[in-house]
Length: 351
Length: 273
Image (cartoon, rainbow over all chains, first blue to last red; front, side, top):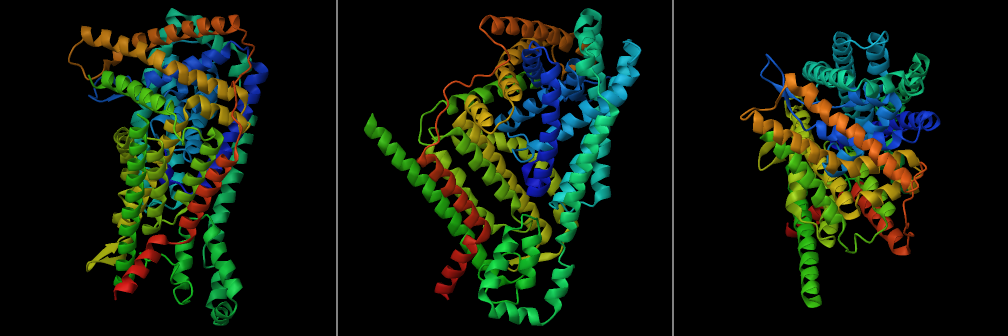
């Protein structure tokens, strides 16, 4: 469920980056003050382990299906929430760079969706509570499954919200939710079962590995107050985004101003004002906004040349747009080809 | 044997990109921080386009084409990587034509709905942004990206951890590959590891990983590791680097604010009629 750049608007992507950076900075502070330096290589090597473990498929009994782990919950159990979150962040960074999983703008969202909810919500509120009186295989299984389900449900819901807020999909909220949540319920069960099997096995064979993480109060404990504080910050940030979106609707003050007949004349007379306002409209990094603005402006002749050719239902401009697009593609291809040829010739000369 | 090929393929992919990053071309020589910033600008500007914008997006193709050819990156493996990840984007975007049937443009007498336009726009944006990330890593390499992150004041601990994870991926994945091989030789013809064995199989691997971490730490301590990260020699940003960044950002901005294909198209069709 990696979020992708193409489904995000810069504002939503940026907000999620800010939230992730905040949680990461807090985690680094916690880890730095509490950590013995031995944990740094452990984090690195465990990250590599989760990376490899993600590629092993396990067949699930009685279902005929198979799945793999995401690893967020396992990292929280083994390293504690702070180090677990940071390790998850580096795994996702490497995946975004080497495997084009999601992309760079979406990386903030992905770290948040897959790391924050598992390490800072599901782990302390469910897993730790169920296992607070000691490790037993039954409890490990219940704790891991419930925590993995909650973590993935929140993560999936977050994907839905981010996509819808970005305004890239036409999917209605309810359909999108009905699409995402049940799939991630199944994925959560698999994640929980495999995580529990691994933790249960390691606990039997080498209990000190699990105990170290579970008893390391400095790394393992997390106060609900702080989680709530972080959540509040995120809520405020998201609220800010919401209001920003709301204000971008043209039916506010701008719209009523546009409706008054004098504005068009004013615009036509005042060239500088028009240039400025059209630049300002284009600088606004909001999806749809520029499109809607263009739609409103179709009356003003001066901006017609600049306005997007395709969105208007007009065969004439469509043809112009298509011809221009083809020429652009051809030109781009030619540039690539000529650089390639020049390089080839230079290389041949060098040899 | 799906999974074995999975592990081997991933290892192979990481190595391809690693080797590409070792090349010495004009693009490889540009300061890593500059390339990182250019990529970020490219991605942000690409996704900032409105959802019905199609033709304006096309000039953005110049960036990957120019960089790929200048940096001598083979196109096929890069395109393959993108094809693997595009389905999620398509999976979400494909609903747009269903929910947005309003006709938006006429093409050869055919009315095309807004949903199809926005769907196509999402695919193009997905393609361009993923391409940009792959271009960055294959012209820069992980170590240099890490040093760029340090220049951006990303905390030392995170960068160190990122590099360690990266370094050990191939080691642990090879180990996972061997474990998988051993399992498959004893249980042929299965789709995956049976759930009953999942605990012992992954657990053994985890325990070996844990022990390896201890050895790594001891080796690092013996070589003087005190929790610091030393990125080694750091290049200086030159005038050429600044021109690279400035030039591209200016080009992206022009693409964003002026619909070049529409302009060219209207000039050409205007001349013809």
